[in-house]
Image (cartoon, rainbow, N blue to C red; front, side, top):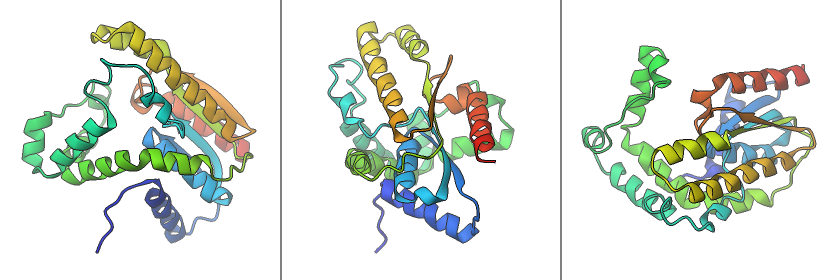
Length: 237
């Protein structure tokens, strides 16, 4: 029977298998955004000899449980892990047409600037029921995964760039959307500190704050990620 459980361990194993299949001879540069950053941290700690550099882009923290301990009654009203798991499981049982009518997916202004084929792929991806099945499993597992990753041996010598979103930009965006300033400040200050804490993963680390960027740094400020990759490459070669 196929194991449909999704967690960082499975993502790490799949990436390792891919590297073996492609027969890479040089250490790779890992770039991980959000949950992908948590997977990247896990991969680094399990296979440090395969990683030449790591770039974490507003990455999920191994201490993400701290966010659940914040007093955010309005922000958490519809966005707890339990609510997201329930929603994702509902979407996973729907057809693509049903998901479309339920979510009415649309492209951001940044995404509309991408080539037409990529725009189409983004929308198609968001309608796949398997996406939501995987998301539900990842959310269900991520606190356990984070605790496991936190206690793995840390190599400490890998070049690391930590990219964080713009705290004030996100607070103002949330205020404009009607969220309470006090809760936004509490959440963003805590998230910012968790981003800073990721610098301890390496003795060769650097923090970059992507100005005017939301959590989707790759859409708002792709230039920041591009420069970070270039900087790590220059350090290696």
